[in-house]
Length: 390
Image (cartoon, rainbow, N blue to C red):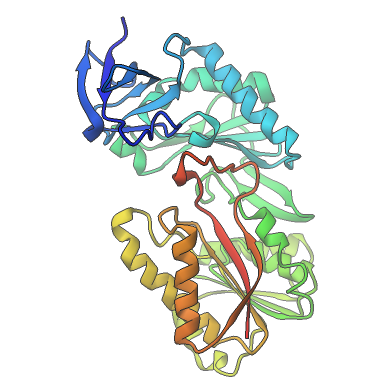
């Protein structure tokens, strides 16, 4: 008989579909749960909740995989799950470069797989998922037949799971420097050295939202990274585009991407501190018609939320003050702890302090390859608003 956990699920969180069982929910156990092994989970009344993998070193003691107590967790299980995830992407008409597996939202907690043309990038971010890596890789080969797979497990969260940070080829080596397409633009991606899995695939629809607001405009793209919003603005007819990022490496990549698309004549990229830049004298007279804010996650934990709210408010306040009447603010947050209601309130507070009014013209989030699971709030992390500043 498998080891069992009996947990407090009085709020019906696990039964409703959330896969994380925290250590303080566990009332008692039976048998000897093995690190990275499978356990059966029951509620306090011994009602079955399903099976998940177990890690005594993590605050998330178990991560649920199935509600079926008898379903084998084996190579066939992962083959079915990967196939279902890929079928969803195909049905949603996703481009050739997209997220194939989005962890908990696809029923595979702590697993991320991104596809860049015919290359896959893999992250196994929890002990149990890492133990099944060979089965996952076999499933990916069977379902997608990639030219190569690269592991990007250089993520600090793995250390909380008792895992080392590792990177490298899984199988044969290949050229990790790729060119992908997004909305008709070309982007250079290095899956071995780029941010996270090599490129942020989740802003595709929000980039396209610039089509009408960027025409003929002077656009400032803050936290530009590799130029995603900036290049889309130029493609959609912006008269002048400046991209800012604190990283010289990112600026170099953005310049490379501008050249790839023949847009270097209208795009200028600079290494700069965005907060300082937006306080500079150039911005007092409203030089920019459109300002894009796409910062890294200010709130990487719930304990950092108060500080993050102050950061989001301050950067949006400075941007709003820098825009002329009828200018546009494109503002984003990728912090899962900054829920949509709080994000909107923070922007509203910034506008109030700037004595400006806002008119919403677009509200966006994640594309269908990053699906939001309604029982798992953590899967809804990306927010994007296009606001006209009156």
